[in-house]
Amino acid sequence: MRERTINSCFAGLSDKEVLLIMLIKIINSSIIVAASALIGRELAHTYVKRTQVLSSLQGALSRLETEIVHYASRLPEAMMRIGESIGGASGKLFYLTGQLLTERKSLTVSDAWHSSLEQNKEVLSLQREDLDILQRFGNQLGSSDKEGQIKFIKLTLMQLHEEELKARALREKYEKMYRSLGLLAGIALAVILL
Amino acid sequence: MSKILKMRESDMSWQEPVLEALPPEIQDMVRRLPLSLRQGLEEIQIRENRPFMVYGHGRDYFVCEDGSICAHADQAYHISQDDTRKILQLISDYSIYAFDEEIRNGYLTLKGGHRVGMAGKIVLDNGSIRTMKYINSFNIRISREVIGAADKVMPFLITDKDICHTLVLSPPQMGKTTLLRDIARKISDGFHGFTGRKVGIVDERSEIAGCWHGLPQRKVGIRTDVLDSCPKAAGIMMMIRSMSPKVILTDEIGKEEDAAAIQETLNAGIKIITSAHAANLEDACNRLFLSRLLKTRIFDRIAVLGDSLGVGTLEQVYAGKDYKQLLCRPVR
Image (cartoon, rainbow over the protein chains, first blue to last red):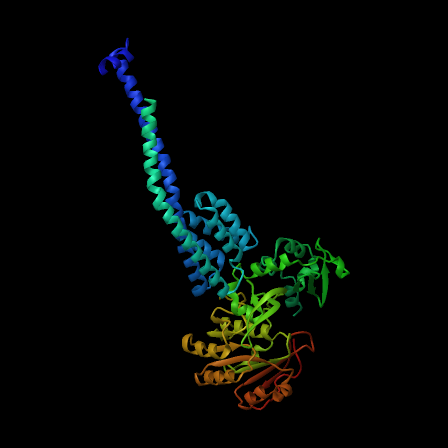
């Protein structure tokens, strides 16, 4: 029975042509499934990336604290050094700030930090509240004595840690969901279109 | 000397490091100042909400927004809060936290050895100064080194190819530090008939060597080591132990512990060259600390600076043992 319907669909076509059409359909549907799965992965990845960035930012801030307390390094060189060594999106944020200051393109630390934050916003994949914390941190950076700086770094570290915990909870919840949702939606779409 | 004076006045190497510490608008104003004023510029005075002023050739000038000199204070460019905030970040290389000690002392040193004095509100902690906030006044003092300042005094400081323990007495602003720096350079580099010796400078106020990031910005000689911003007494002891210098140079002694440290250098067989505030030998003998130090007859030579023939005149050189005058008239 089934054979007959298929045959009626492809009535008048040679075996070769039938095979070709089948092949195209299989390729199309696999593209749909792959694309949809990728979209799902990408969505899941923003959650993963946020936690990664938040944790590497904390690492960078701890390094900055060490540079300030133990080495009394100048901020521009310290920022560039930290940026280079931690790499990634948060590394870019630190490195660019240091670079802007070294090249005297920004006249205050907060200017440099804010413009670096603005330029790296996309790659950081952070939420509004994370960016707010970073912005507040930038306003204080380099503008007070050692004690003040340490206090602000500690405060920022604490806030970032809280955000990281929240981000991790969200990640637990949504990472798997988006991944499987992407794949399943792709399969569903392929079935419907076939 | 006139040649030296000429060289000193036309020396414009101060511009780059000093201007780097100023926001662009003020930089432009300084750059547009008349050349003759720039060549003789001594101070750049910045006070929040007040006219922008520069000091040179013995008087101060109001500076307009276009860099010209104006007669009245109200025509001058007025420094804004934004300006002072930027200057504070720029002079500290965006790292105020790294200058806690300097801010407590009220000054920091720029690249090139130029000194920036600061004033604001002092924060006390148990009666001692903890830090300064609302910093709103800056005085950038342009320092120019005078190579050859020690030419006249050198012959008196060396007997039998050995260096004498020397005390330089001088009122403030008479070229005491300049002289010490040039003495250090001469002893360290050596000159005709004298091989250079290892010199250690303990530079408590970063004035002799004008260090920036610990590196001397002044020509202090090839065999010279500098302990920057180091308390004198502790620094002298560190030098003796760690660097084995033949001569130790330090500025403005005045504390009991300094005398003890000087005694220690004598025990170690190291020569000491230092300075103190006093108008002349009698004045020094009236000072409690100095008179006691002089009575110990530690010093072989006592050089007195003044301005009878202009700033940096060598007024008299005394032999330390019997106060015999070695100079028949002031020289410059």
